[in-house]
Length: 187
Image 1: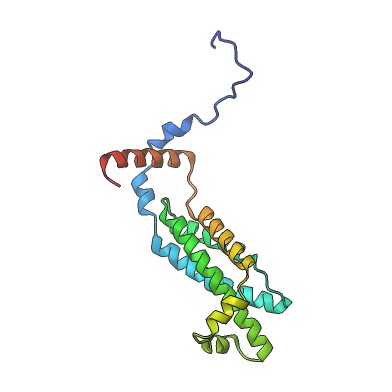
Image 2: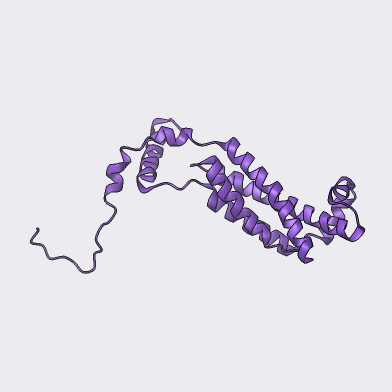
């Protein structure tokens, strides 16, 4: 025991072992586990399923919920985290782009479902009947500022959740490897 008095201002260090455990982490294995293809495929599956469920939910209740695009972004981010296991900037960027495309696709599908309900037709019939003259009307009358804001919030949520969660030792090893690889030209 030391003779120094303990400072009441200084908090005890609880995470001293992260640097020691970082030497045991195989960073190359972490990098090889990344899969941009799996992340993109998972994101596409989520977009299709979420759009259908969103349209069913909206037509059932007779209301359109633009905030569902934020939920879509969260789900895309979580699926990309699980499927892609990404560490670098590509995964949040892909998640944000896919959430933006998914928000647009979901809004189109919901609008087609509402139109089909009013006309007594099927949703796929309405989507097949879309022409180049339909898009300007759709963007001027259906898409609102709220849709754009919620779409951007969904893209941000997707980017936030897209990267893989690392333990302290994995993160410490990853940062040390990145700092070393920049200087050595491995990146």
